[in-house]
Length: 302
Image (cartoon, rainbow, N blue to C red):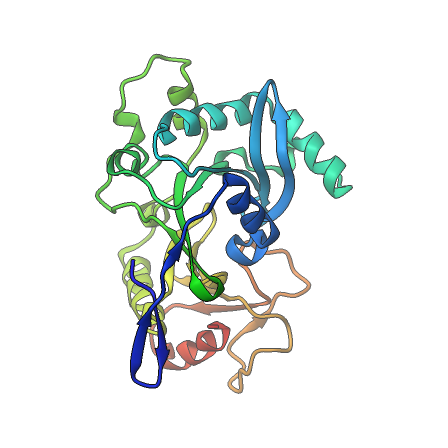
């Protein structure tokens, strides 16, 4: 990756500065975890059954735990360690809840956690082709994030995206009761297709129209299917779409009183429980107000 600094019309290449220690990467990520990922920091160096987890975090949107490991060298298996740690989490759930409650002074219960959304993240300056291929199963909840630092205190974090044509982890032959079998049965990575099940063609076509319109609002919006909705994200969610049988509910991620909606097409959800983010929802059954609705969603773009 080439990083440049612009001075008028001249570009100056910035030199990459290697991280000296894994701890340097860990401290940088933990200090800025919420800004980088939206996750809540829980514990550094979490010890469980003789295993040391570099960073334990909590994804409040999905109500799930996230394990983060940092690596400088490239000679390790992200698949084996990732599967092992996810299996460890599922086996010792109570220990994770206890750690959350002790560090956050909270009252989290086992039923409050969606264990099917558990996640493992590896953070490293680079990954080998083998590491990328071994973790690229579309339904394997292991993510790889490349992190690099450059001159002038520039930090670049690049989550490696999985191909839409990636195979399923269920194709990996494993014995019943093995770690791979357990996490493939208990942990679910959602896709857009999961949200199309039992929906009408009308609803799916409507979703595709609004999806394309939202993606056209900014080049860095990505689609992240969740359990209860499909998120459209930059660093945080811009909006979420819940595909209903023959219509859509679009949640706009803005707080009450911050959205300019002169036509009054949105509903205030600030005092109501709901799955999507933000305090506004729009119910749509056609695309007649698509352009106006895009003007509302655009207000949530950073």
